[in-house]
Image (cartoon, rainbow, N blue to C red; front, side, top):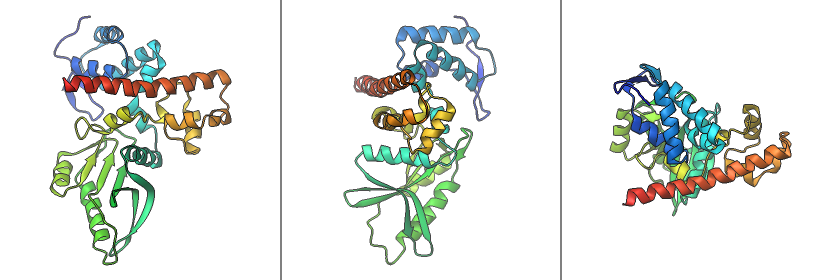
Length: 291
């Protein structure tokens, strides 16, 4: 297990950064693998790493090793990639966000038309709690290189202002939300903070980003499953199934896409384990943070 401490890696954005053993270890912990299993995977990666390696190559090695040990480990590990695979329409992502908000105590509607002072506006998700309505705009991207810059909150803020400036508007609106599966630029974050706009991205806010909410609530997307082919996933997405949990609740759809009884049993077992692991691992992280 030998490697040079000054190894550089190329991220998907093209940025060159120092290889971090700590970040690799933390990402593997989220898979649910045991410390001994993680140690073996790290040893393999360190033996095969080289200067200027891409982050994608490191991910591929990690994913394949996790899958060899246990399929469910790989399913958890690929969460970020699984969300990119939910496209291209963006509607499954809106469904995911609406479900997250429901789990957090909101009532939600998808694709709501709100009348503004000048024009009508379609809101991706309208959340409501205690009589206050929160317009939620979802910015889904299938390319991880995409960054939501300041133009996004500027544009959405202007739409929100048109809605609340409608003299016929009687709805009690709270702050607007902007949600993305990628990340926001520093200027976008500063503008949002200045104008009381709620931002949610893959890892923002720290400790309560999209990945944290999904893991905590057990809401892995259908695309996480390794036991389904891409074609089978597309068929289920066309049926309106977005989450692993939804597939377990509507398991007759597995028969509909031509999956054998044996594979169906394995798929349902993996879903059960995947959701259970989410709660177990989240509890462990909470215990560590509380100490």
